[in-house]
Length: 372
Length: 264
Image 1 (cartoon, one colour):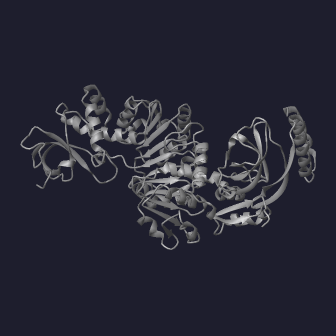
Image 2 (cartoon, rainbow over the protein chains, first blue to last red):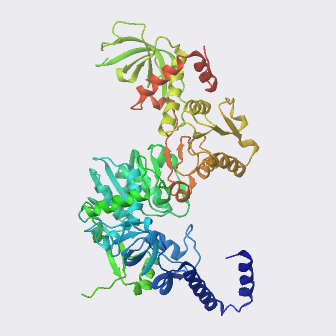
Image 3 (spheres, rainbow over the protein chains, first blue to last red):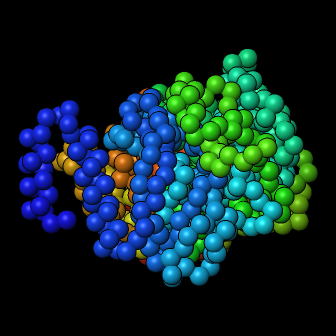
């Protein structure tokens, strides 16, 4: 849209009474979408998606989107996974996660291809795909940005893709060697996935560390941790751990220091959780320098865009590996789902999340209700 | 004297420059006697060793704690091999590559030796953060003089240099929170930082933005050359240092940049 037109529209908009603005805005967006559909000769699709309307308020709302362009596919969502840390941070306006409202959350969804553009060759209608897709019933996405789900992997498993990639890149940076002692601090979804992926590397012991015992049962399921320690019960337990590798998966500033306490002299600490905010009073000498610790940052945005090098794979490479591990049965994730919610329940789901998630670990939205 | 021990008459002692408070010392001495094969009956073998007992000029040390000094090397130079080996170890641990920006801070006797080794490893540019009064600065790279700029200005200058480079490795030897803060903030994606000075107060660090999101590696350690002699890879680093110091020109540069080291 030319700038002069934007200026005129803005001048008109500011003269309209505020109470009428949302309705006009909605109509304006609809008109623009229809013009775009005509110009691009694309269909308009009606769908529903979850929106954060304000702090701690989430609703399922109807929306319209353009059908797929030449390089795109239209995906009908089957299952989407909540990323508890990021989505809670946006919902509650935590530091470093401020977004404008309405905000459409979600980035880990699996669904079926129901339409595809002319230039798309490698997926067919009906294929199950997964990738960075929002909590929405339909979404048009670039075909080369999603992963084709291998046979035998369900949508419920495949929707872990983004969280799986996040954890895989951290586990890779940890460079766990067989026979090492590993501790995972924090037993939310990231921590529990870290347990499972670290377990594949044959550590001598894998200790789950968390404040309470709420998530103990899940952490000790087959493929998970060997032992579970509660910091609330014994705050000093972290000092006796002496782990070769510590994965920090809590996502609070103080947890960074707790993770360092868990490490042995010469140990490695991987900061996998998003600890928004400042870590204060870090006694770097006694906690870290005297122990010769190496602290490694691991965030999905650190991944290289192209090519791979030791300890750094691309997003696509990690994604393919995650699906391969699921396909081969070396990794199980479905048992980490503690709440299979309907999209209509989103308000209740996000209320729980805003309170800290209670005992939940994996929360999914199931978009396709099958008759049972 | 137990099995595999050497009796050494210490001739020269090197200072421990670390801030650890352990006061480790090392020295160069003549191996007098041994129950192993290497030096038995020979008095012309000089060794470098850790000194646990400074009260006596003749000490008995395990053979594994002794490193034969090449005959071509003067004994002062042998002492210099220890901080040089430690400096080599620092950049090795930070994987400094040819063409990457290397930053180090003043505030340590060996700061400029670390800068010099950064140049030898191909650091381009090598930047020293320090006060003009820190002491003799070797012309190993650009110096950002902290006495003439506030931390925000320093950060701005450093960021400008960092933007132009694909890689970043830095060592803090000062332990000064304001300098450490500048290094954390200036560090780009995939940066590597070693905290090797002893801070006198606890630090406040934005791990989320400066470590987690940048995929950075922070090595927490102390820079104490004497500790190198207890490093499992000490033989590798000492051998490299000995080889480097066998070149007289290079050795003189090294001696100049280590404050307190005087050639006899």
